[in-house]
Image (cartoon, rainbow, N blue to C red; front, side, top):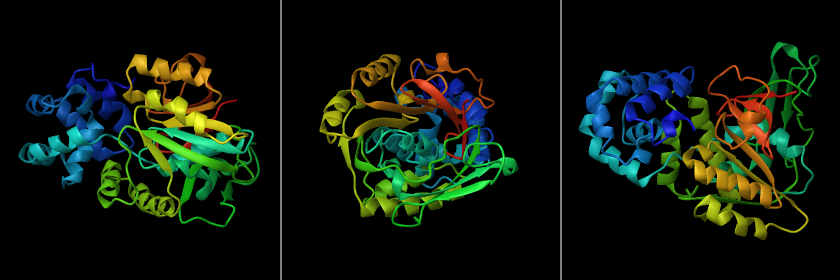
Length: 341
């Protein structure tokens, strides 16, 4: 489990780990804020008023920005947070980190397209369900150095892939390395559903505003993509069952249409479960008639790290695994995909 989401870790260390591992190179603002909190005992004491599971940096920072905290230096942020702590704390208590990054579909799609179809998709920790529409987005896959996007190491360096009915208003860019099996066409998806403790509604403006606040400050491309993905999702709503993923998954799998390959997938979700919960979920994935596609931090999904034969260059890299076997390394928001040989 990542230290920043581990409720057993002291608050200052959670924020220090967030600054040094997750925010570094991803958000200069969040790196400054997290490092500042880690060295500020007074603010740590304020955050410690929250239950341990609600002290995570991403949740506190998102709640602050939801209430109007401006991107800037730590001193200004700390002063603002002290003044507005009651509103921020209330939002931390009533909300969760439900980042719904449609860009992650770019690293999921090659694995989905390689499975025998038609597919029935179930996303656990689905938030508003934006990642349940991988076949409704357009993709622009790149390979650095002019490499072949089809998976080799020579040839054309870019490939576009569109939904069956034409280009989507959502275009997902992803840089490739390794022998990525970039699909020639979209997978056939005949059914889709999700599970979340607190589902968000793409038709609810307050829920969409919370999704916006969860996007890190400098990531304006993701913010624009969120709005476009919400528009796509509003056209074809997907059912998201309210409840615990471990309690609801078996019944939802049973509802999938006969003849379809059921794929249970998730990204940056299992880190919010304790070890017992993660092990219980992995055991269910072994027992149920499903393919299990996980995209999580390196030590999060049970058994995956032990099977990883290539050491990731970046500590923040996620591991994409199929049925517990690592198949790729991914950038957490879907910006890059390194397929393992």
